[in-house]
Length: 209
Length: 284
Image 1 (cartoon, rainbow over the protein chains, first blue to last red):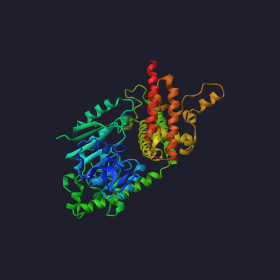
Image 2 (image 1 turned 60 degrees about the vertical axis):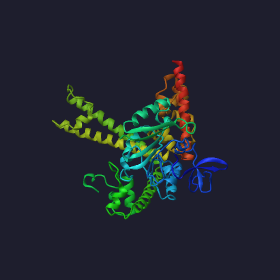
Image 3 (image 1 turned 90 degrees about the vertical axis):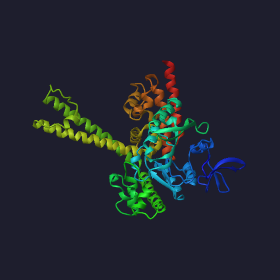
Image 4 (image 1 turned 180 degrees about the vertical axis):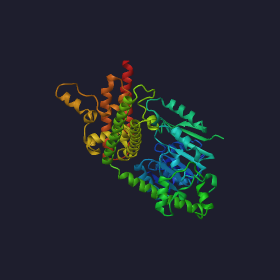
């Protein structure tokens, strides 16, 4: 189920999820493998749970909510061109530094809620959209970005309930998101990311045929 | 590039020339309604020899664009934000004053008209039938322009506040964040002040009336408009204001001394507010 380039490797005597590459942010590494910590990265948590994401080596990726690039750096270890969209200038500074060492990361200082502002840069038919943004209207953002996804590509949406509505029950937030996603996507799988990430839920979805 | 999709042009096509600067500008400022297979287009049209060459050029231009945009954001400072919020308030006040003056004159001209005398938009697009109406319509158009400028000022504040004080902007909203900076005189003074001061910023008259022994102490100043206080019932507004002021000053300190967005302080406020709101529910 793990994409080529993502392995379970013993680090300090413990079997850990790893990608192949140089250490980027001080994570434990050994023998060319570096730890992809499931409690730091939602995508790592999804893969560690054994969920089929459809991710494969050399995929073209649109990563929404790249932040300073912790997860992006691991994805870029096995993926092909990786468009990394981040809105905040602070994390973008670190993302730029990362991209300077990784020729397949294309950093974009853009708002994921406004896909028109990067549709002239990001190509159509990407193999996978990974979304991890801590804002409101996360499901709407996923729908608005569906135009970039290939008909046989996957959306991996990590939904943060507390960003949508801090007072609401997380499950009602997931219900609302699920209904909105269904307008554009067909949900293949969903799972809670607890205990690695509190009040987070992941949806794996494809475009409606 | 096919004819029917002429409006969707790639970043390369939107650049004024083939320099890296022009291409970076096109990446940052351009747009398209829909994505296309840009790498293939670039090769087919002969702009690039191979997709590998395309991606190399794209990364170079995107790095350039991101660096310039980050640099531009880092020169944004609290001082500009203070000017911007004062400009915003001036634009709003001026637009409202003119709108009121227009309405007053209009009611004097045609006191029994069926049209809503307060509808400035409708007035601005109507045809004058008297010299007085010519004046009213001309000013109504200016009111609408001022309101447009106020909206643009608001978007300026939004983008700059998230660069200057990401935590304060997230917690207070960009406009209130800028207003707090304006009252305190900047991010550093705000970071060095106490929660009690933040709680009553903008309520100085009430505070001094209280200190002179003439009134009870004010519960809140400009933070009154924050949803955490608006949503609290009357009896709990004092505690909501105290809690919010405490967290706002922490947000300002994190912004001033570290500058990093720190999610934990926001969840702290949420937890605190949930406690206060549940206390209200228990009382009802």
